[in-house]
Length: 570
Image 1 (cartoon, helix red, strand yellow):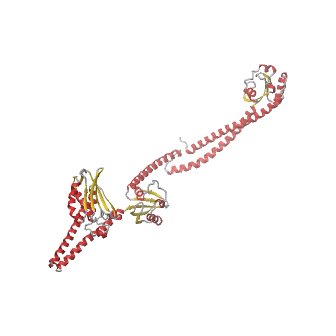
Image 2 (cartoon, one colour):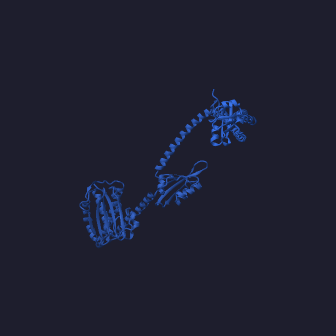
Image 3 (cartoon, rainbow, N blue to C red):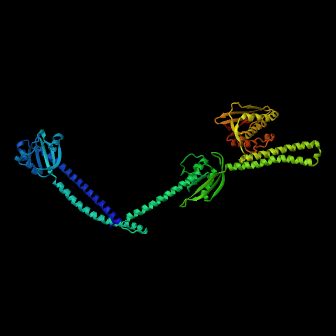
């Protein structure tokens, strides 16, 4: 039959008490015995010194003196010469003394002769009891006086103490049994109630409780694994989000920043958990949104501008999150809409520019047509001039529409490219011949710096001609009288770098980032003097990128500009 938990625990408790009492008794008995022996040794030492002072000098009287002195002090007195021969002994007759063993090997005698005193405790075969010996050397090197006392009284006192200790221990053990039983019942009753509530009736409460908690621990471990797996999955999802995620607790301390948020704010530190968000996210517009959401506990959606590490337009959606126990933090999603706002700006500018580019020639055409209809058509001298102007504006409109259609086709990938191995110089020569009349009219010289050894490029011949044509055309139109345009090329690794440089008025630094935008014309005072649609550079940029190349511009105002792009080698 299985023992109950209370009985097992009681038995264990009583075992500990019994062992403790046993060790305590042994320890105290040993200490008591050592104490008795210590006092006996001190007494023996003092008495031996007194006896040594009264030893007679006459060897013949030693035996009688030893017997008389031993009866007086109640101990055994032995006189030994330096060679170990016993001269007298209070417990022996003179005849027996002559038959006694040589005592030179006795430890107390050896120590007395060497160290000035000697002591030992052993069983005396002569007296058949344990004795404590103390020896001192006699004056004038006459030998050694030894005094011995039985330790029977010490044993008797220790035995009596042990009997008393056993009685006290037995009483304490009985008291411990009662206390243990009452204590264990108080401990086991709640365990029985707990197991009973679980539908388990058993004598071994602790065993069943252990099994029950083992089952619960397994379930908890499984739940922890599930939560850990879900947390890992959630972390992976949040880490791969393009949107930046920021989470703070009710005290305004950071709980989470996903990689996108760290990149957005230029944060390199890995462990930010627990740090105040005001310390880490040093951006006033964002902090105002988080503070409002945290204090007011309502959703805040706002568009803000961050100025560091670079200027970005951010759409912030912050909402309060209940973390339990009345603690409400904030979860904020930040979406970078900088490019979207740029596109919207470009779209608005595009609409405005198209409207302007269409309205100007149409207004002129309308005015000349109305003039002709009002009777000027009969005036042959002026009507022909009017019709020529109308034709020029119509041609400009046609070019504008063609450029818009070309740009739209390129951006929507509706243009078919026929890539082939091409010698750039062949294409450039034809373009230079076509643009020579225009260059002469502007008093601008064109120079080609294209060695015969240049490698071929992989390109669409027609589109490459369009790229070079637009760049040289712009270089001529925006140049100064007597200026120069240079077309050069040089290989770089697996690409060919082509440059179109001019000595014109240049481009202001603030306009350089936008020169490839549609209809963007930086210097409005001069650009309107030069005919064009404003779409040429935008088309060039898209065509270069379609060739898997790059294009950039460098310019110094009043010194000229340099457009350079790359093409793949064939």
